Length: 567
Image (cartoon, rainbow, N blue to C red; front, side, top):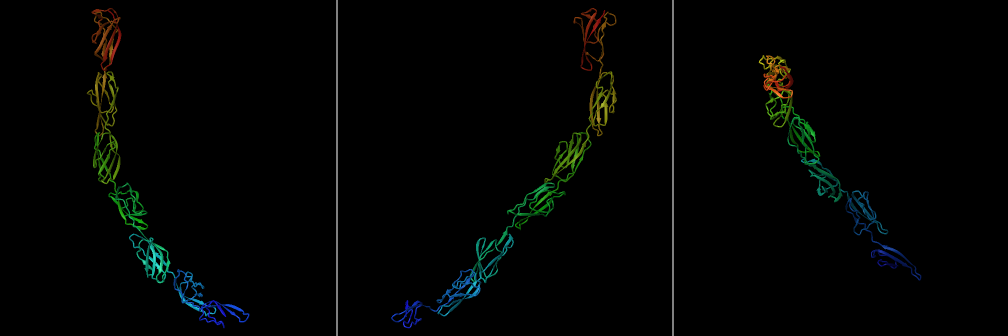
């Protein structure tokens, strides 16, 4: 027998192998027959030590790296088996942790080599479940209210280390308490990151978040106290706040002066109402709210004052125009007054006010008053003052121009606003109280002053004066023949005036046929005696011219004619 390679202890004669002294390995053993024609046959042979199956596993977390067995004492792998709950690779012994169920298990390694005795080894493996963490609590509160709690709930056996963030800032807590409560947690967003079970050393990611929101307490800026009058349109300024989105609710804690009892938002504009005699005050309390959080209420007042009361009394003492009227306001005390008396004049007197009217008629009087707050009232009294007009004396007479031939004069009374009349006709005759008297004047030329006194029931009088002229009648005659023959008849030529001419404005001129002036006289009592330059003129026809003025007017007359002289 022969062996190759060296290392195998082989008896060449018998082929016996001494294992104790042989070296493990693979060999080729050849047997060659003796003789002249030897025959050789080679077989392989393997020398192996007895197998060792020893190995160990450790403690692992479910999310750890899949572990392989650690061989000890020269152990090698065989066939790995595990009870249900563990997923293991039978060849490599690698445990699939994520597919396994947490727990403690016994792993077996069986080695069964042909020619060798079977060996087996076991070891325990522990797979820990991963801890979990959840977060709860939080919430929204108003500034000044107690802060909410934030609670962490874990699984596992603890102690736990929890990693989380507050508004993205890292924070860590280690606690044996489950659950763990953060009381009065400060404002922020709490987000889980991971949790570690310090008892097992296993760490797991965690998620979930809660928020602690502290809404600010809003403020409210209200208007200052407002003072208005009854009937005013009251614009209440809007409410404002330092915080956008703030809403407002208001309630009236005082008297409803037209604003109402409550409302949301701004008050707006309303008409003030106070029909009493004393000021009335609305107390408006405004509460701001932001995200459900009410702020501190603020108050302001709206005072509505009553309007001054006007009560006018007027007294007009009997009198003729101009007439006085006394006005009195008996209403509530006022500070300022403005009277409008209806005739274009005004007064600012309060209390008694005296006004003089110069014209008759009915007058509307208006009084506007205001108090020390500025509230004003206006009242108009139609036709509160009515004044009768004074008499207006006036008359005419017919005929308006007359002469001594007609002296019966009819008077027509045109007076206005009178009830009694007194006539003085100017001729020293008895007066008359008739409305339209007829009066006869003497039939002599004259001028008379007529006076009419017209009187009303109040004793007011007016006088009208006029003049009537009784004219003379212009009566004259001019003869056409005279005979200056020295007898006692018809010796001179002259016009015969009976009445109506002015003897102081008189001229008589005589002309011969050639137009030569042969006589002139300015005295109506002196006529032409038929002489010229002391001599009696010849018989014939002569031209005369008379110039004179009427006694009752300024009218002048010029008359021409012919006169025949016969001797």
